[in-house]
Length: 362
Ligand code: ADP
Ligand code: MG
Image (cartoon, rainbow, N blue to C red; front, side, top):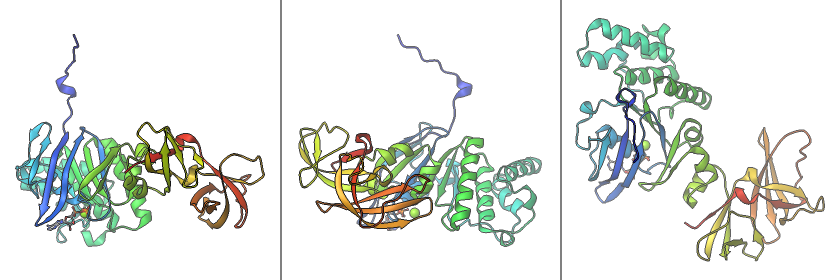
């Protein structure tokens, strides 16, 4: 018989489960049957283009919107119809919404004063959380005396201060410039490690989602299309939308026959074995996986073509090729010593490893 040990003191809180959650506004479906289990302490991103239902999903978890159907559970308890203040989840929005007439310390203390916490405990909690977001020295400033990044850190401190089991973040870095965004991204990640809370992070920025998350849930038209590790989302996209939304992808129309992929003009293409029926499909291969050899040199097998465009992007060169059958493929070659980049007009052979090409049928 299987025995499972339960150690009560080890049980972490902050598990969220969405079960078939749907929400429509008038005739339009905003969230179309979303199911997702988020473990205590997990960092999950909801990634998708504008209008894909990310914010609506987050607002239903927070309690500001109510699903038409479906359930939301917090640590196994049904909270679908619980008002926001009884859920006790920390929320951080894109616009920081700090009180302009209050100092940083007072802004952060606000949720605790609302809860009528004793003064001494308010002070010690505010001090601690301001240290966590590295704002200890700025406690007496007002929001207008701080940069956007600092204001957003105050918003994070305010969401953390009452020790919620889950933090909900809706595009918190959206209003900041690129350098600052990258910096705060690392800070939020470090903070996640430190506080160990469940974080659900909404973003339309795929780089952000891949860099920060334990798991990424890609949303499109109100549905989760794939929820996996960043690595899997990138290298094993489950469908065409995911492949094209996350990263750059070469998408080659192919015919599948007996488990093998063939290009439109009948050339056999390397791809992971296909177990399904014969069908039309797309082969997805990332530009950095497309190897480029000058024709004649080593005479490697692959698709023959010519370089039609070449763009220097700093660490790499992005090379556009056209194959003899008219396919356009992009190859990304790192700019390294001993790695000469073929010039426009040169004949080349394009190839990739079998394991780097994914077959997508939808
Ligand atoms: P995202 O955050 O991914 O950009 P949203 O969840 O905000 O997407 O919106 C999903 C869809 O629902 C969009 O088509 C949007 O126009 C619609 N929507 C969102 N909120 C409302 C609302 N309060 N009233 C009407 N339609 C809404
Ligand atoms: Mg949104």
